[in-house]
Each structure stands twice: as structure tokens, then as C-alpha cells.
Image (tube, rainbow, N blue to C red; front, side, top):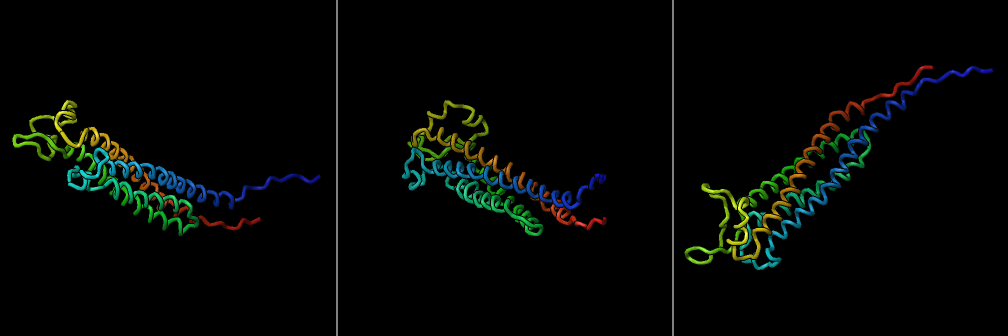
Length: 226
């Protein structure tokens, strides 16, 4: 009877699986971030569009009676269009194979992530500013009704956000513009804030892929002597 001799594990399998698992993990993270950014970008775009249309009427925009921060449209071009381009690049690069292509894509993803981070950060900052300053509206003054920003914070009292009685008693037009701005700026600021977190995580993910990917890709398979 022939004696069974167990064979040693192949070094080829062990060394080839390591870089594949690492690239798969990084690529999957890129794809998850890209897919998650899409609905947030759509939310920011819709919120900014609605901010430009108080009472869902366009004549306020045409007459220049829209809150200044809404007209900057950071939810459209910042957390909207630019983030959508970045999300598309993240999903496409998650399918990249090969050592050199993988590392070059990680470098590109760091740039994309940084641009998206700046775009989302500008939208979040503008949303917070618009929320704290209050809306542009028609309100009563000693000289009669005039357009302005009556609810902007003053040094002698807290802002309107802490006094809900001012929400319906100050602005005459557009109707319920205070509630309109509070809700939409809050939604846009929250969505862009989540985009900042995801883009920052993606920068770290791409950096790890750029640094560690080289070490994994340099694994050599040496022939096993029998």
C-alpha cells in the first residue's frame, strides 16, 4: 500500500489572494460611498430648487425677492452636480483591476474626494448661514412694507430660531417663508454634512489603497523546489 503524504500549502494561493482581498475591500468601499452620495446629492438639488421658488411661484425669483444664500445655488452645483460627478467616478473606479491601474485610480479618487469634500462643505456652510440669517421677505417698517431680512440675529437678543412666535408674525410675503427656509436649509445642510463625512472617509480609504496597495502588489511568487 502506498503511504499518503500530505502536501504543503501552495504559496501561490496565499500570496495571490491577499492583494485580491485588499483591492476588493477598497473597491467595495468606493462603490458604497458612490451609491450613498447619489440620493444625498438629489436631496440637495431639490432643496435648493424649492428655496428658489417660495410658494412654488417663480415671480419671487424673477423680481429678486429670494434669500441670498438660496441664489448662490450651492446645493445645485456644489453638493449636487459636483458630488454626482464624484459618485459616478467612485462607482466606475471600483471595477478597476490590475496593480498599476488600481494605484493610479486611488490617486484620482483622492482628488475627486477632496473636490467633493470642498463642494459639500461650501453647501453646508451656506445652508447654516442662510438658516441663521433668516429669509428675505416683505415686512412692516415705520416707512411702510419693505423687502429685507428682518429676522437676522441681533447682538441684544437670540435669533428667531429660538423664538417660534416670530415665524408667522413678521414676514408678510412670501407666505410661510420662514418655515419654508428653516426646513429646506436644514435638510440641505444635513445632507451636505453627511456628504462631508462620506468624502472624508473616502479620502482615508483611497489613501490606504494608495499606500498599502503597492506593498501588496509587489508580492512575488517564487517557484517552490520539490
